[in-house]
Image (cartoon, rainbow, N blue to C red; front, side, top):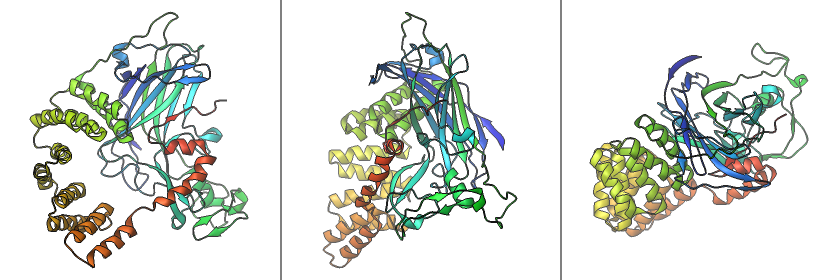
Length: 487
């Protein structure tokens, strides 16, 4: 392990809606533990205040009432009030989704702790049980795939051949971000300040799999091609005598590596003091606001994303992606007319950005301006000739124009890049029918059905969602994490 660099980009915020504050830069590490190098992971923390009264929790999220950054705006929070802490995880210089590899077998999770001025821990999500040597508590925010077998059991023994459904998948695309929400209640007796510590943790193998690999012994239960219902025990006496490696007679305790971390403090108001919220937007914080917005956009929190992206345009008006990202949130919400002037501003800043032309094409397509949309998409395709999304959009518009031969040509280009592209297979079936073909549509339909997801397989997720509220919570696009039970 060695330090790679330190980098700025830590966002903290709190509100009766949103309040952001920025902390000291986190430290990034090279983690050469999964046969590749993590070149950069950024953590940002955002604090959002909501009201908590007796047992009935009232969440107030009025977008726009923001004090950010906290160290500039001087936000303070009432003892006994509720705080939503958003931690933003952003990838840098990683050319693949994070994490990569066999993402059903790792332990990669986000940990957040909060301690008061007396050192008393008041919040802990992502705790490793058994004093740091056991499994990660189930309520943590994981980065992984969670496949299921036909009986709804987790695929956790390298038994991918039995996978029949997926409960959830959470990975961060290259250059993107994830906004993670934690619900923290500030005890009325806590003394200021509350110290927050966020860590992105990594363990090479999940705790269950390590136990299984060394000492897993099955009990009675059914085993079929599509499921494994057997319970397993992990007694050290079951470890084979000829196990490879230097560790013998015991199950290895794999280390937990910190890939990135960030710290900040939350001030508590004095009795009778009224909290004030105001945004403090600075150019140096532009990336932090943008990362927060990206995380919310990917979750479908369109209003929150739109608000964050507007702060990006205030921080740096000459940053074209700020205007574009506001437009993206509006387009996803269906507000294509409202997005038009924002796209024009982005174009005025940097007309060479292909993604601006792409989203302009989506607006033109919604308006029925197919020729204009095709012209915009061809501008993008000239820069990125192997972009499947662009080619699929071009093919769809050509199909809507009844230019079926052109649509087939574009779709064939997609399939040269990705033979299993479901959208291309489906639209190719339609285009062949438009041309009056007889045999080719049937073949395209056969391949479409071969590669598309089995929608009925989602019924398998009912069992684990009913048995585990934590897994059901993790499945939701927008969700919050509470503290593990503190002893």
